[in-house]
Amino acid sequence: MLTHADIRLLEFEDTHPRRTGLKNDAILHRLGMSPARYYQRLDQLVRQQAVQDRWPRLADRIERQNDRRRQERAQLRRWL
Image 1 (cartoon, rainbow, N blue to C red):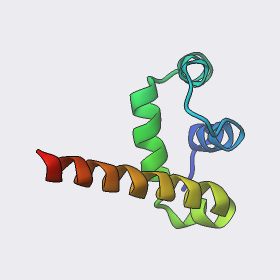
Image 2: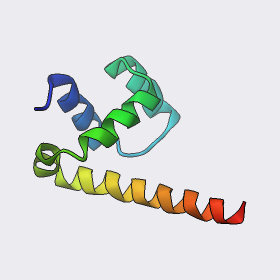
Image 3: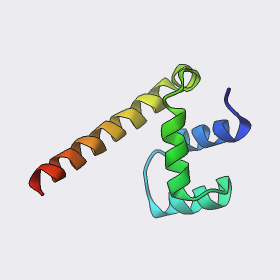
Image 4: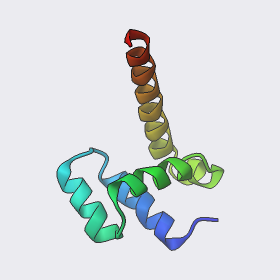
């Protein structure tokens, strides 16, 4: 079950897809959470079926970004 805060977070991400310093400030002031907590919660939410049904493009985009970051970290580990 999505809370009102979860819906606000998802709608915010849907309208602000790029990671910038201004976005971090808006996360802090508009949503009242740290950017780190925001991205943790976003990652948790996009795994939920209700989110994938209501915001399929957003969920797919976040999953692609997460996959890309995992691959980048794996490549860096190979060089160490």
